[in-house]
Length: 130
Image 1 (spheres, rainbow, N blue to C red):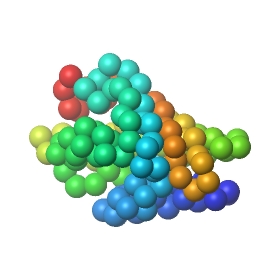
Image 2: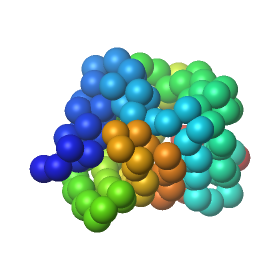
Image 3: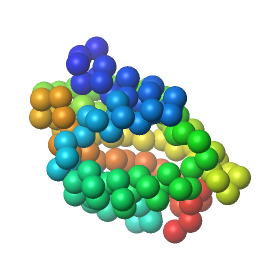
Image 4: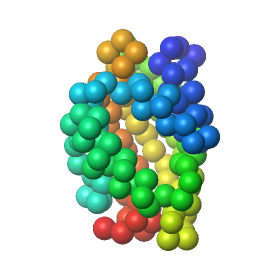
């Protein structure tokens, strides 16, 4: 397992335990984060301030507890790391949000400078609305 794979794996483990810093600390302050599809969270977020206020805070208001990610596969090539995973969480509305993902990270040193997030958009919409 290379360094970036270890960092992502440790970050997701900590996230599931309620500590978001090991994962969020990997992102460059000017990161570009794109979520595919046409959901309420789809689009491109520029910089961690926008990621925090327009993506993570609104999503956090909908999830009850912590999102638990299981890493299924990691593939590295140069500055890129693809991570396939499964997420499990409860919603504050009493439902579940259990999705599958593939994140494609581009790194500069030990910081993530861009990420494209592929997920089941139907699951996202079913859990949180349009």
